Image 1 (cartoon, rainbow, N blue to C red):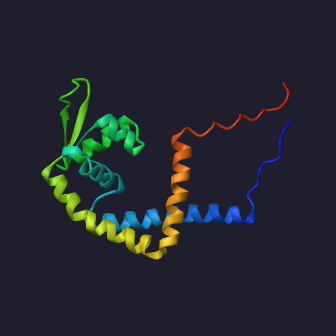
Image 2 (cartoon, rainbow, N blue to C red; image 1 turned 180 degrees about the vertical axis):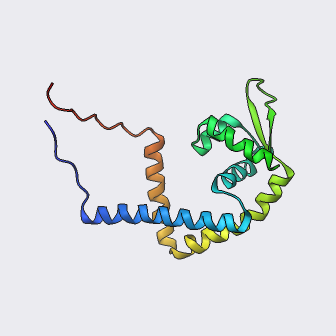
Image 3 (cartoon, one colour; image 1 turned 120 degrees about the vertical axis):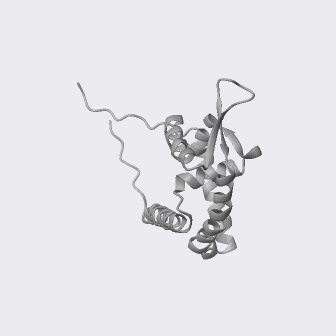
Length: 165
């Protein structure tokens, strides 16, 4: 027996479409600005900023992959490209011979320090400065609710029956 889909109301549809459109347009604009200002991709900046906020500008590769929601393989390939540009190096992990760490180089730190002020200005110009303090509070609360739900492991949806055999 099939149940009727829970279609979105007009207000819910407006909310969903506004979110989707904002996500696409904002991400594209901030990415364009980042690349034009610093030559970095979003992925480059994510790696550099994660390392910049890490203890001693280093992080285990597996931990960085988890933080970025990337596979270790994808991160490894990206780190190879960044290493060729002198932004990061890989080193053995002092606490565990089975793991590797990625370390921000002096060039990587310089690149991050030059890119960060321009990046934050783009984020401000295209998002932060457009909202009121009340909208910031509401947006943060909404984001936290969704992140908590997804981080806790959202329930998988039930598989649809393909009909009688």
